[in-house]
Image (cartoon, rainbow, N blue to C red; front, top):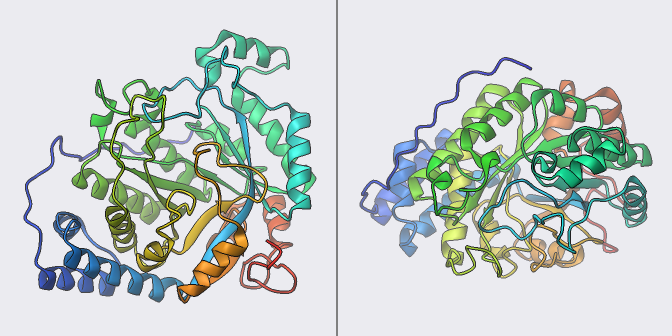
Length: 421
């Protein structure tokens, strides 16, 4: 286990009272943030208080678009992937989740290695370059039947099985990206040997969300200190890492700002945060939060823009296109430069009610907004080309064979997304 610096959360327990800025005040704060390359806490909280005002929000979006232009030009990226939910058993019970199942649920499923191999083969035929392995947190801790299932295969943890599954994918010729919930430093170091990148949505730094009646009450793995520690250890291990913020699960504006600043601080120390996802909460039936009102489109766009301004022009800011299909043009105005993984084969198993857009339609809509869609691997060119020490040599070798000199996926002699997508 690597030594980890002490982590201290600074989130206040209540939303401080702030007056929205005028448009002129907002424009001045935004202009300074764009020129400085980042938005600091006090002006961020001031701007957040004005996100409900159209004139203030427009100033924030305009600044975010300029920041994105300075750091990313007119490029917007996407990864062609296959989604492999290795197991949907999970010891946590998030109040908004429909992914996690109990072992006696008919929908409970753990993929066999043969099923992983078959899925990857289909993905390669469809031109996918990423295998997204997603699974529940530590189901062996909660379920005897899963412990027995693992023991029958000579294993004691789900992570040991995950490593085998990633080997199946890697050996077949696809690059794994894993989001397995909380992992130890030792587990991440082992997964580094066959993964291009790892990920964990920070979601929120708010410890309030662990209180009774809040979204993460039954979720030991959603403790923000635990999630921050894994982010820190991934940085110490030099692993390209995906993080993100979940909007609308009970957090307040100050806590959202704190979450973005925490991610930025981690990247300042280690340079390992490859992308930050800004994901809106989707209320789902048959969950305790089914009647919680979803965040408005305007506020979603506003917080994407806030993420761009806080994180700066060089960070890859992602918004999943299937969760806001009517908002894509607005998100591009808000400084998004990545659509995440979009699968031509599998549904979004976390949000199965939200179908992926066809890649050709995503290309059309991106270009209609004056942007160019390019295809990436599960790791971005910045790390792949500029930080070779962040990879196991054989992983980087496989990745480099699939990209051009600019780090984007080569497809039909172009670095754009082909019409066949």
